[in-house]
Image (cartoon, rainbow, N blue to C red):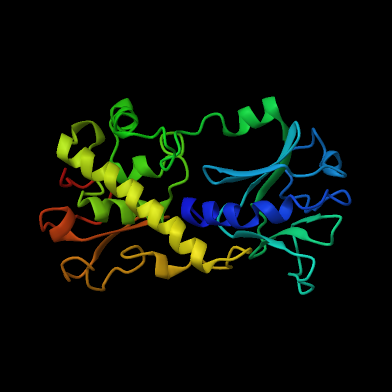
Length: 283
């Protein structure tokens, strides 16, 4: 699933393109991905997208008092195709054509269509994204804001980082990267994290996500790649290879729908964590 760095870089890359001309026709969306009927997609026809932003893992294309919201889920991809680009993907699940010949096109791999697309007015948009936590790269997200997140309820750090209600936009891959950078156990308890651990976690969040946005901006272009760029990741998906910090073999904990990768010397005092959730784990 695309995470904050990929999506933020994409928004920055396509914002000017989608704003160049009004939406030409009624956008087309596969019935399975369309999650809102009021306002209808037809409400976008003739309007100009005046602002494009990311909120968590949602892409928001504002057009006056309404906005097209897109959540790519796991297999969805999206991109802006300028008028000069005539080769465009087949099987689009979202196609927004602009009057100058450009297009915003969303696709989804596999047969299951789980992308979420809809047009929302202000109350609808608040209902859609109002539950999201703070943006970890926002200027307002300071160490005190992180403390509030950590102290809200006792959670294991890896799960907390991936909870969009607490911090917006971080998924499995960058949770692993952040905790490795901070040299913290994925199962450390949020409310018990000492001051030095909190300082390292805050610095790691800002550094890892900021670096990710910069690297994605260099590589992605106007279309989100069909697969996540593994070059962005130092440890996630690299279990069995040397830790980039200490050269110890990276370990993992395998859950039904998630694999957590970590370095025992760097993050858990050298202890290899048992590969089951209810084990007695290092805090």
